[in-house]
Length: 272
Image (cartoon, rainbow, N blue to C red; front, side, top):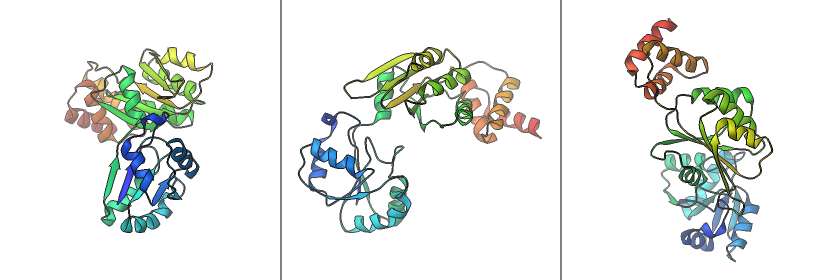
């Protein structure tokens, strides 16, 4: 069996009893960084020393076959450096391979930076989308925001502190200066900070420099009353940004309330 185990995102006090029990008895642990796992074991007061196997983004595909064989004979505990494996961390390809091979996959739930940031943000939590890390390059980042311009769900991102100011400036330029934004920094750690404001305000704040692990939470677009012509214009803008016509139509329909069928047919007619 493969067991995905969530680890603390900062505060070791968030480690579950099930995680401690699993680490205290595991024969084999596949870890994103074995050095981090050694520190985790020490920090939790665990003297048991399992066999540690490195599993990271650069070796996951080639390691999966070996790990699957190990999982056939005994439980294989899978850890990322913080939070839940497979969520912007190694483990996804291993899980896919395990499912295809008929090997059972289980989970030890626990801390999640995504859910923690969403909960504390003060933005709507009933519907949200997790977008992972924003692109590194300015042009790619702008295109990503354009594709999300009409997204009505709250959006959660991971971001590097070194790129935060630039990303917030891009968000302001594409989504609007007044779009509500929350920056969550060092969640669960000693210097935890939650900064709320508009995209423009937080872009200016971040210019002074920000440190630590960052989660960025951005409010969804407000539903706007638009006519069919304007809706088609929005659809075609998304298509030019790289979105498929069907998906672009669905996004604009959701944001505006316009008929998906009418939007698609009108946009297709313009394209042809």
